Length: 80
Image 1 (tube, rainbow, N blue to C red):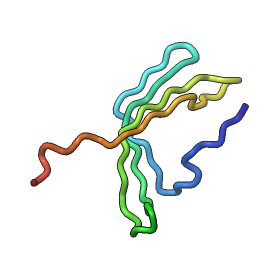
Image 2: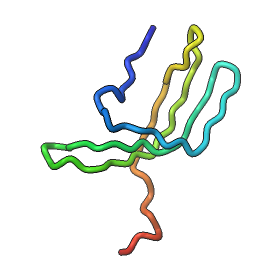
Image 3: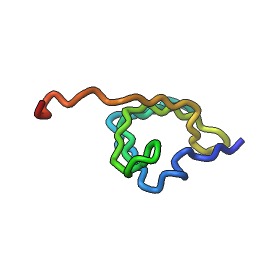
Image 4: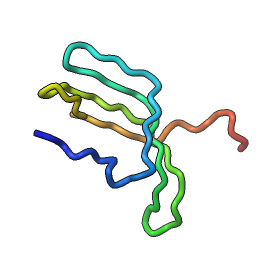
């Protein structure tokens, strides 16, 4: 079963990988998803989501089988 990537609807999407590993037919990647998006009719703005992707190799292709995303922690070096 081929899954349609959720990122096709977001042309500016990029995934900044911080760490990744694979064992056999399973793999994971942890990083930041970055894209530009309008939410609830507001102006388009950059958005960052901290996320984990879990992959499984199916018929020779890596497929995302689980994704979790949340807001990144506040930047402690940012001015208050």
